[in-house]
Image (cartoon, rainbow, N blue to C red; front, side):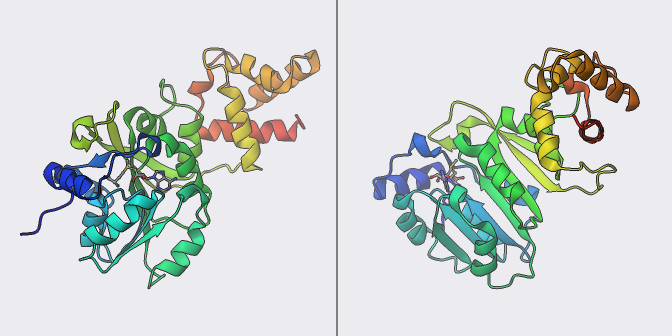
Length: 294
Ligand code: SAM
């Protein structure tokens, strides 16, 4: 009888057979709940049309469910010790390729171009991310030239909330803006720490990222300037926008005058907190300061 990897008994048996000890330093927490895995696969709307990149397959619990639902799965695992385990555990799935790679050093466009048999298919990312590098991995995915059909990833619940946060909330900040600049973002569901072996000391959530349906009305003249300004404006969250802008551009009287004139021109109250500003307003600000040559 076939038993899924995503099951506490089977997970323990695999770990024992191969003498595995979950490595904290690599964020190894293995999912053992088949329902949760199936819900991740449905949140990603995986069909037999799709090619999937998985990051950090571990002992293959999610990989197996992806293999059942997708056309092909390419999984990048950093831990050498897990490669043999994955090859054996997933031996029955001919549509899975395991690559022994650090995702942060991987050439994703090349992997997508070379490892999938049919490149005309949509490419989706699905992963239970190693939590210690959630943000670097997201930034790498978003700055890649690969046009992801969607990115559906599990991460620490608080980070998930920051990704999906709207203006005026505590969780809203530069990470929300960096992600939402490209993607429509929502939290699909929360996952209890109890369904992992070993159990992490935080709860998790699944985030769904899909390319923006509505294009931005105003584009920044330069993306790096936009994100530099955003970072600067959030360096003192509890101070006013005006104070943060002075910290970015300077406090000299002529600079203050320019800041005031920009804020008046684009109709933003100098005394609001940075977290009140929408992405569109940050873009307007960036462009207006550029016009002022600040
Ligand atoms: N997918 C499995 C599951 O859901 O049970 C394991 C998820 S576990 C949270 C994260 C996995 O990412 C581990 O297998 C870990 O070894 C792997 N990993 C950690 N850092 C990595 C990196 N830089 N590149 C690729 N994989 C990495």
